Length: 511
Ligand code: NAD
Image 1 (cartoon, rainbow, N blue to C red):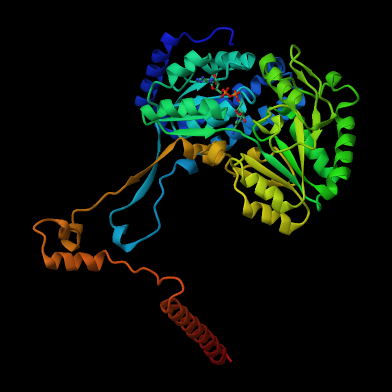
Image 2 (image 1 turned 45 degrees about the vertical axis):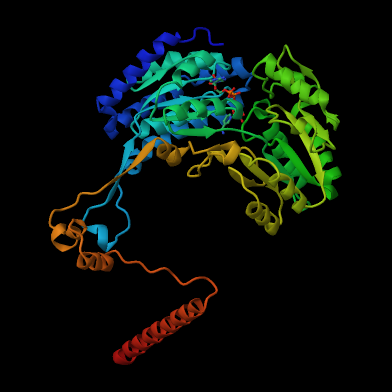
């Protein structure tokens, strides 16, 4: 729990200040948004070392992981928003159509208003201040609710935000269930929630009462297929890193492996070799391994490991008080094993052998859509088959964990792993209302628009039908399709002949 939570009775005042801030109109000014984004960038830059420290306190996070996986990524989000906010917020004209052109149709990008961002413990900066960059760029005022579990980082965020940002634009509410429960009683322009599926249902139910739109950034069990065509050394190296970074507490960590039986033995041999090179004989002494967020979470993982019917081939030790879980590889895991019952969210890697890629695809498709699906294969056809026959938030071949940081790509889940997106332009769009506008000149009534007015007559109806006409394409498989294809073929031929004719004429004319 945070050292000092925001008193629940103060939440309405915090919200009122944000409502006032939005009503003042200052966030409609793109230059003002850019100023706030610069301040946010400097908040992160000037306090890097302090964030490295809080991440070490909360999660035992090694500096390299704090820098590489979290702080850099968050600064990149701020930078991208800063660089593009003018372009992203420009009104856009839809494609030209004669019927609508004179009504000056435009899509205006408007802020949604006062929005709420709720963060998880495992990436307490990236999952909170990354979406914040999108929300500020889109012109909203924002209430931030960091996770009480990563309390050192939450305290630092709460200390720094009022120093760097306009308090009428961004405010922090510290605390846990009582504070979040109060926050979600209010209507918001948008709620961006990152966390577990269980709590997402609570947030969604409350948001439905005020018809507040919600983005869900959730998790689940993200599978990895290791095909027989995979580079096994590379697969072992990348998968084990992705599973153990932040002690497995990453929403896009590989959750379990489906390994083709033919390569299971050599792959496990590679995994063992990598394991030793990463963590040595005693991983508890390694300074490259984060800790589990709390003894309760460590105890949850211990139970999953204790109850597995698979064979533990490395690791298995858990020290609940020290929040330590040894990187653990478990083979011969069955579909109904304890390790397959929930998102593991710890450095425990179950291996399920499969006879074919088709079996792996069937296995994945029988479960909820994962946040991400990984395939290790060199055979292009296998990669394409896996991508084409499954559904997931993202899909990556031959690497893990990196894709949320890839510039320009949307990051989000599908089905039970979430809905909506939070990175880059996609994050900006999440917090933006696409407002359709028309500006209709009076003279249009003289041409066509007066036909809609009573008294209705047959002539008006006939005239309207001419203006608002449509033509469906022929039904598939009917004679008309064949005929229309033939017609298109004829037209293409005629156009080609005309082009060749024109070319010849030009040539002959110039010679
Ligand atoms: P959590 O759901 O326990 O907590 C998230 C937030 O909800 C916290 O701020 C917490 O205070 C609040 N909360 C907790 N219980 C609540 C309740 N009963 N009522 C109202 N609010 C409540 O999630 P967590 O354990 O912090 O995060 C881990 C989960 O988040 C994992 O499932 C992980 O996969 C997922 N995650 C997803 C992403 C993503 O971008 N898709 C990123 C990080 C984490």
